[in-house]
Length: 167
Image (cartoon, rainbow, N blue to C red; front, side):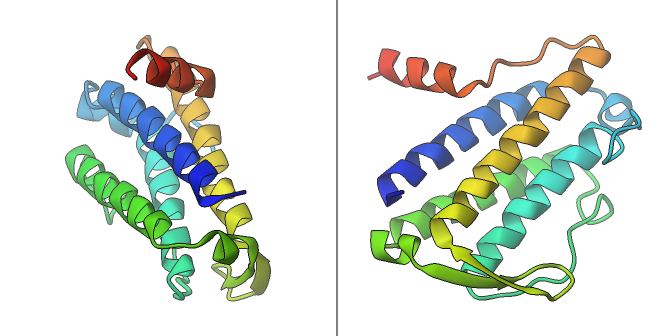
C-alpha cells in the first residue's frame, strides 16, 4: 500500500466522520449521552472510543506508547470532541505527508495498552485505523436509527462518487 492510497483512505475517513458528526451535532445532549446498551454505552461513548483509538495510533506512529484510552470524562461535551477530532484528522494528514512509501512498508513496533509489544507494517496499522472508524460509524448509524434520526450515507462508494462529481 502506498502513501497515495492511504491518503485517499484517510480522506474518506475524514469525509465519513464529518458527515456523521454533522448529524450527531444536531442531537440534544440527552440523546447524545443516552446509554443505548451497546459495548460503549451509546453514541457519545462510541464516538469517544473511536476518537481515542485514532489518537493512540497517531501517538504510536510518533514513537509513544500510551497506556490509557481517553474517557468520556476527558471530553465532556460534543463541541470539544468535534474540535479535538478535527485536530486529530489534521495530525493524521500531516503524518501521512511526511511518511515515505518505504517506511509504510517497514515493520513498526508498538505497545498495546497493556504494554505488550507487537510489530506490523506501518501501512497495516494505518489501514486498521480507517477500518476501525468505519466499524464504529456503522454502530453509531444504527443507534441514530434507534433514536429515530436519519443517519448520513457514509459508504466508501459514495465518497468516490462525490469526489468524481466535484472534480
